[in-house]
Image (cartoon, helix red, strand yellow):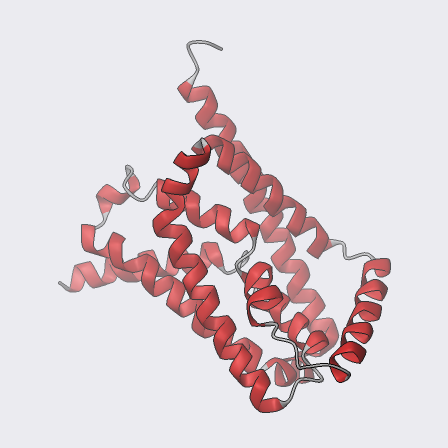
Length: 232
């Protein structure tokens, strides 16, 4: 039993290591600071709780229904890997090299959003943009579907069956909790590490995303070659 728990811990750690660069809570934290600064404190806390639940729900639905969705639309695993890898690389480059113009545009949009919020009903930003695409974005969804499609493969034979079934749920719940903690502590985190610290972490995450995206594409191409090697 202890060995099984150790294997479960390894799977959960691996899942968190793979998902954290994609499901980057810093993105949603930045959105919250810009779009939620004029939302009342209690209402903001309520929306943060909603967003955390949405994140977990989106990931669970994606993991357990992703294969059915792919079959419905005729999407292959290699195609998903390549498309997801390209999306992840694009996201990584945008985090590595944030354009000054985009930053200025974001500031203007945030100011406009704040002014509009002052003159109408308090907006609900829990689902869009905090949960989707802030944390559970296209790259995250592609990674989850790809992981779900390979969960019963050769790698899974090294782990007990129940750990394969339980690990995704634990990973998604932990990501939801981390997401909630980051958003609740958004102001304190920025005050502690400063805008420069947030930017540095964002660039590191971006580099990791570029590497992961390239590997995603390589795996997809290799899978196509292995499947159609005789034809090629």
